[in-house]
Amino acid sequence: MSGIFGVVSKDDCAEILFYGTDYHSHLGTEYGGMAVFGKQFSRQIHNISQSQFKSKFFDDYKHMKGNKGIGAISASDEQPIYLNSRLGPFCVVTNGFIENSEELMSQLLKKGDSFSEVSRDKVNTSELVAKLISQGDDIIDGIEKMFTMIKGSCSLLLLNSEGVYAARDRYGYTPLIAGRRQDTWAVTSETSAFPNSEFETVKYLGPGEIIFINESGMTEKKAAGKTNQICAFLWIYTGFPASNYEGINVEIVREMCGRCLAKHDKDIDVDVVSGVPDSGIAHAIGYAMESKKPYRRPLVKYTPGYGRSYTPPSQKTRDLIAKMKLVPIKDIIKGNRIVVCEDSIVRGTQLKNFAIKKLWDCGAKEIHVRPACPPLMFPCRFNLSTRTIHELAARLAIRSLEGQDLEDVLEYVDHTTNKYKKMVDWICRDLGVTTLRYQTIDDMVKAIGLPKDKLCLYCWTGQCPASKDSDIKKETKRACVV
Image 1 (tube, rainbow, N blue to C red):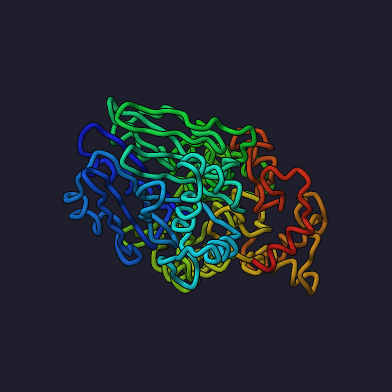
Image 2 (tube, rainbow, N blue to C red; image 1 turned 90 degrees about the vertical axis):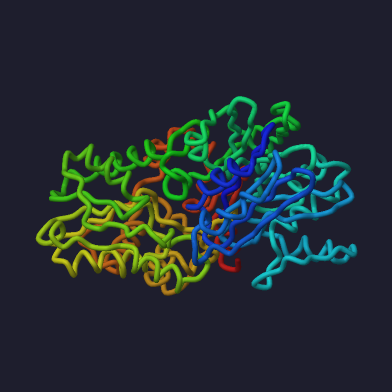
């Protein structure tokens, strides 16, 4: 998971680039980077795993001179990547996940190419993309050919002496949005990067669309495709509350999710509605508005120094962040029946060990957990998150109930079946809570407000974007070996 930002101005752009990139800090925890072109390329990359982007780059950006630039905050790869190619020198940043990266790297190596940015024994995605683009007849041809070669997704920004190219992945899984401020143009993953820098949103790029921005403005280089299936999880969890995707605001969707959850809870009575900070808060606010129960904060997040517990690559780091960042308030918890709204239950260990345990330890009378999305069944194929089915709480429940991993989990995906109920009951007992009820797929889609066929629901259904004939059994086999 990464956040990318690019800008072209008639004046120096480094300060705009610095703040615009920083507004993507919720999307990555490992590396940050910026590249600016003036008389030549100026590039900086830092490890931000133990510090904030702002502190690492605050002095750097003041010495980066140029009127066009790109930046990224990443959960895995160092970027931007610089390549002096046969198409000329350029820098590139990417957001996505390429399933067949090792295969593509092997093909390029056989052709005599080489790779320098290899970490954790894996190819750097942005370097691979840069090498693939350089095989084209020109930049546009190279991007289009790259799109056809990769399995997975890749949205990108490419900086050269002429300007910035922006390309959204073929199925629109990850967003890119163009904005304008007088004579300055920008492209971002998150529209929340725009308001405080006085940019107005001009265009939501379509799937596979390629645009070019320079001092003269914005030009469409390749029209959008017809298949658009954006990641639904952007609204449920990964997106920033102030951001809009396809013109739909994240905070509003989360409030709607909470309202939908509350409508199914006529049979319980509670004293307090709460959300696991931060992404569960808006879901809880919606639940409180619908249920007319008071929203309170039994768990508060100690923000300085702690990012999202979902994004770091190691389980040990995720657990440490989850443990240290949530501070319970006993005076609100003791003796109360509490609804806990959460964006999702992925592995379940952090919710169980570092949220629920704190509530019980502080004297909660009842704990009712309400995730804003259905049980996650498949590891994401289009971005870095869970990588195997063995990590998922729902799959652990199925394994325990069936005594083995199943290839066909259709009955567990369908919330109306007895097997689904048994799975949820098992997770409820494992979490140690009073009740557990998940959001249904239909209610989640309704809350987002896009047609179902415009959303990627792969994590819940095993259905791939643009693959109308996806087979859940086949997808389970693939997921087991990722």
